[in-house]
Length: 280
Ligand code: PXL
Image 1: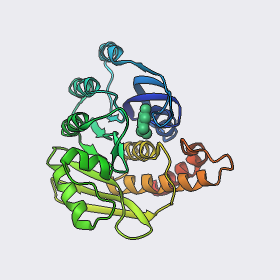
Image 2: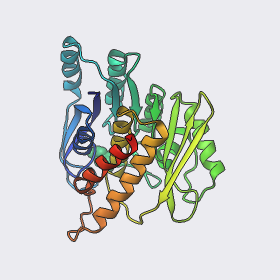
Image 3: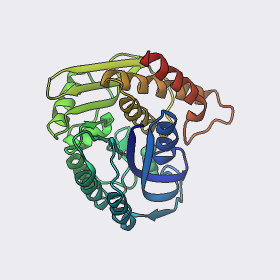
């Protein structure tokens, strides 16, 4: 069984980061080791959330793993709370990256043209450096803009995305996949570039007109899980994009109208069916 380490916070209530990565990647049949960077009462879109920072604990935890001789097939980072935690993530890459370890970075920090409350431009720049250490990065358009000093646009054409991809590729990762890319009305999806071969790929599905928290984490978790299950890059991102859209659709049916997270618990069986079918 493949083994992933995911480094991100635990938001106790809110369905994002570890509370998505752990159940979803585990359900996909991939062992999921967690390194919680902080414990928050909720994610940061709630008011008055509490935070217990765990920065000091990270190295002692990973030193213990080192002494146990643990090997990771992938290291997946999501929301990191500070520059110091970015530096620790880099140290963990250096210590645990073997020839076959995939470094997958979701530079979680912004959406809809704005940085999340905890972050500033200096953090965005530091995240850009972190991305240089990855094999695969999956920023959304806002994060891509902050990391490459590009003007954020709501309306854009394919040339704008291609320019973003080239600038992101220059940060250093071999594979860049920009998420939330809409190339025609009513559609959304991903646009990827392999900088070594120069090959691009595009996947577009129907846009569901609703915004929920944690959908980026869901997309990344399913992508990295599918890659670990042996799917090609294009298949993995297509499965993740479809699953994310299906889960938003499912959440819209919920009469309780949850605002803070998606009902991925209801769509995991369909994800597992899709994995089986794609594998056949
Ligand atoms: O879903 C990204 C995320 C993860 N963790 C925390 C967050 C957010 C987005 O706001 O606040 C704590």
